Image (cartoon, rainbow, N blue to C red; front, side, top):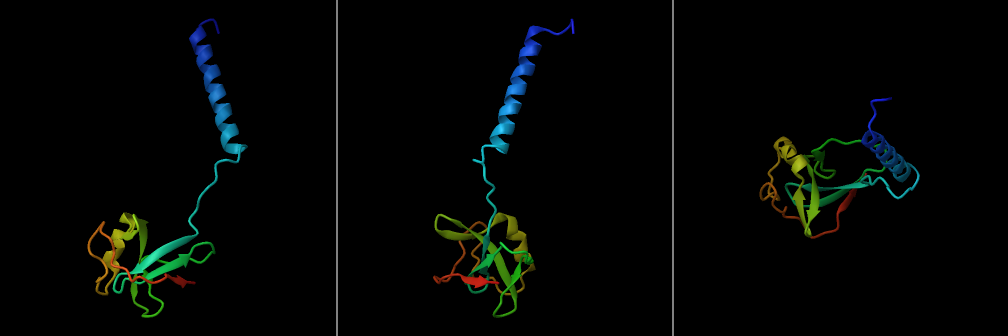
Length: 123
């Protein structure tokens, strides 16, 4: 310990204080809450009808999803941006798996032509 310089001791003390504060803030303050999605918006790429899928249960589904009325695989996730629905960039590849006409899809990163109706709930 003869080779330890004062600045090294100060650096260790600062690191210890920062680590202690971080553990306290994350573990005990309770101010940080995880925000998991409890629902997902989907659009039928053929008609523009919006659907909402509940994600709170243990039920799983595959993207692209099947339309409950037509039984065609035509539902892809959308996100709302400035009041318009856009196919999430993450799911653009799912459009390649959809075999029905994509009449509601204008183009990548462009608003989807949706029907102005309340979204239909999927079980």
